Image: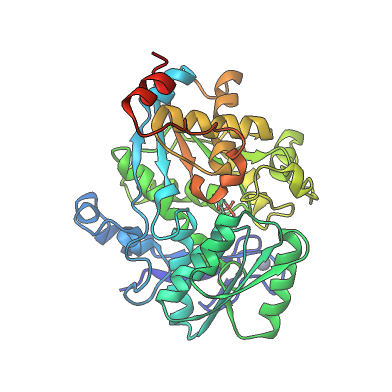
Length: 413
Ligand SMILES: *Cc1c(COP(=O)(O)O)cnc(C)c1O
Ligand SMILES: [Zn+2]
């Protein structure tokens, strides 16, 4: 039973059948999956959903598969916690963390989008998958593709953190480090997609890949007790997740699963690469393509995309929802990573540091009101970006294995 109706161009509204296509032939707009919501509403009740397995396929009527899901059966349904300590520190009442830093198996939000893209690629008959990645996507395609038994060609820019590189290599894909930044990698992957019959999860599988990001928002709605928050702060790289969370809340509303959505959407980027924030601040719909600051000056690499494919839709969601966008400096990012660890026991990577630093700024600006419900999107794990904090954490206290040494060196007695 599938509720999928086809693809539609987001810009001119032309319809296309389900296939490995991603841009409109007429206006070059991106294509998006269409659903039969009346049909979905019949089986997607709160009780029915609650009885399903705790994985991302819990909301499968609104995901683009024809058959039974075979991939990512352990992915999604990540922890959602009320962050009392952090709330006290930031001076707000009702604060929540949605933690995809412990998504399975590769510890980022990419464990949602990749299983959907890979399951769809298999339905469409592909035996080879690929991606252009800033690191986390590479990990996810390598791992999920391994389990699915597919050939994998993975492209990253040079200079990524060791954790992301090794966290890809261990699954033994073909890993290619391209000279240049992500935008160069992405351009090359578009050329390869046009020439070879491979499924690039974020190129020709993009309409299906992006739908997987909705599951983050579905879970927030369910885990908050079937409602949408007043505010949500979300990191932006290629611009997939933020507009898809916005869409997911409206889909839940449309199915009658949550009351009407009043959420303000807030976008977070690192100051070293902030094209979407810049567009929001200028009040412009056009994302100025940006060359990111040099790697040596950039703490964050996960969000380092100068020409984000879905950037305009981030701006649209931020504006429609009466939200805003802010950027965080390297210092602010690192301080926020440490703040989250110290207050909530969660070690996030640089993208999470960026998001929390921006949330803090928005609270101080009064754009996030202190008496409202706010969700902070943590999308990746700190173990992958050791480089960011290596010089900041101090060292263990070395002692001899004696009680006297313990008392003298540690207790200072
Ligand atoms: C990919 C990624 C994001 C967001 O990317 P979008 O392309 O905007 O969806 C956020 N955080 C982390 C850790 C990521 O890897
Ligand atoms: Zn079009």
